[in-house]
Image (cartoon, rainbow, N blue to C red; front, side, top):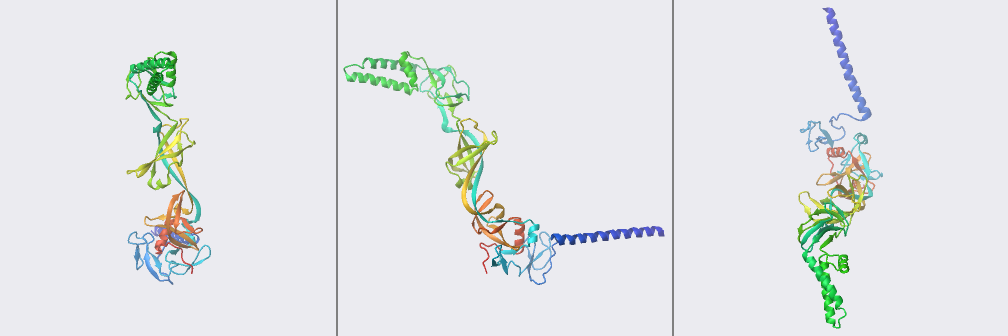
Length: 442
């Protein structure tokens, strides 16, 4: 029995010694971590030489308590805010060495702590800004280059030369031949007027020769109004024979997008026989957001890329700005025009369009440096030696990852461009207030 008791005591002693060694090692590790890294648990204790103004929470700065304790929202330990902190009294030394009087917009963040939370600063510079407007385009036909082919006479189609949709035709190519009794009668009248004018050209009576010539000219003009070409009229004069079937030629170069011509079909001037579209210039429709409207104008250069031709850039211009805004998308439609002589761009293609707008040289800071709250825009100015200032600014255009600064900053000042939210939390804990201006020299 005594042997078992001895073993139990030895085992208990071993466990106790191990636990003691473990806790001792954890305490030593914690001490080493605090010593070499600056990390520590935040323990709210009353300062010995400074009066505490109130106690607050680092996560909820709106909480202000008279006594130490825990946050009623998140249960974190409250931290003290002192009355004589650097945020409200004393002098501040800027990066340039200038001594200025601290005010309620300045506060302190230890440089070692700044390094731990990865704070980065960027100098305020006067730099050229270029706004890039990117949007998606949908390609379509140029409406001004669509031609409808109709006859000026009634008749029957005899032969069709262009007999499928999207067939390419050149200007002057034959489309179809037509038989029209009206056209045959007009040709007879023309030949008769031609012979009469020739016979009476030597008449001693001027009014007789003039009348014959006027009748001939009127008949000639009537054939032209029927869209008969001058070559066809000359052939009629040479042969002296009436052509039963007249060939209708294409008025433009392009592709047939609609075909209503079939053999033995009766057509009238109301019949749209062909629709021919010229693809050598293409339109692109894009949508522009409201805030980009002032930066788009007619004639502006545009570059476009497509998925079909990677790496190839198409260059065009803004052709038209629609006068009405889309109430659902709050965007304005803009029409672009691109040359398309090689017919690479196809209607209904999707493309990416880009417009670059130079804005000139302005005081600017990185986009990440500005905290936009909705009511005001804020930046944190690094005054040096751990001193920060919460500064109100007025921003202008946003371009290329930068904000134009209209008011609140001067060139060569430094602003926090990374870890802004952590610095913002620190400023709220220290109870600073945003200012428009830099602290006044003392």
